[in-house]
Length: 481
Image 1 (spheres, rainbow, N blue to C red):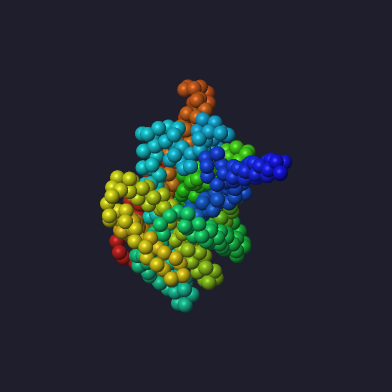
Image 2: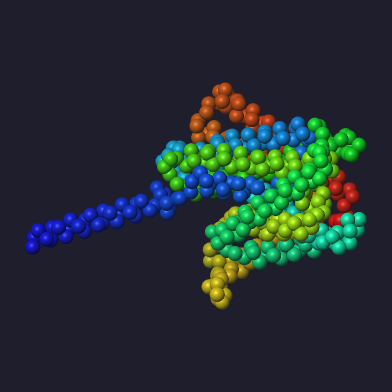
């Protein structure tokens, strides 16, 4: 009997040890469930984030720069983005790349490595950039909705018909749609929206590429020149400003650094997350650069100096009209989802600050449970409803006042590129690695940062000049086309 009792105790002990081992195996070093991401999932996330509406302006950007400078600038941006992404991956963990404290977001990394003042500056720039992206997406979505109407009008009445239409009703329609979508409380509840948006972005990009190839085949030759748009088509001054603006458009197409650490936080270890993320950055930037070159160069080859600012809505293409309608509908669906993905960090930040400051306020914190048949219970918060509705209305009104897709994209690219893609990653890397001031490596990194600052300033100036020129002939609330 004693022997049996000892055996039972030993079996129980082994069971507990196995159970504890299994529990330990199920969690990471920070107590969260084991991350399961790898090179391919991280690459997919990056490609999904990068290939967005920015691809539609690349044919126009290459048309301003020409066959030599256009692809060269694109390669330059891809190299800088890859290099600074590699620096940023080392900032996911503070102190030690294998066992250091994890930073879950970009701003967490800036706060833990650079401290308070730079953290506040980074947050301000990041949220301004995200607000600007919401404005840009509203403009792009309205242009695509308008393009569907015009495409069908041309099909019915012929390509010479005026088919005048205004973008404003479509902006309002998009805004109303986003007011409803913005009431989804949390980021983790819109994963399905991201998936749909990713499929849509590949759909319209592939259609744009296919139509460009078909147009080149129909022309029987590649259009365009080595130096870009010719003087005569535009003035010398316009050519300079447009070339600067093209830099901003290309920079916007590559902007994903702001969500890199969030993507890295999905990767399993070992090996160290930074090693996996560097491989993923290499794969994804190579894929997107190849895709961008194909889309941009084929659009330029198809239309030369007259490459439209938005490849699928500038009416370089008229037929097949149904394929254009599918592409523009895909853009709208993608932008509905992308708007929410980019705005969720702003929503979360404001709501967290308000809840911390006034935790007892009934209007701010009280949630009302509303049963929805077939969908469970929806938790309605009055402050969330009012604040998010106000936010969407403000982006819609600004879009209606500045409905210039290319210029806004250029400004966003210039605003986000230097601080978020170059300056903060370089400064965090220097602080992490304790690189001595005035050492060769420190000087090289600072030179890279300064060169990119100059590029951002030039691109921003070109885009603002573009807005000023557009405003001279622009009449608010009149038909855009």
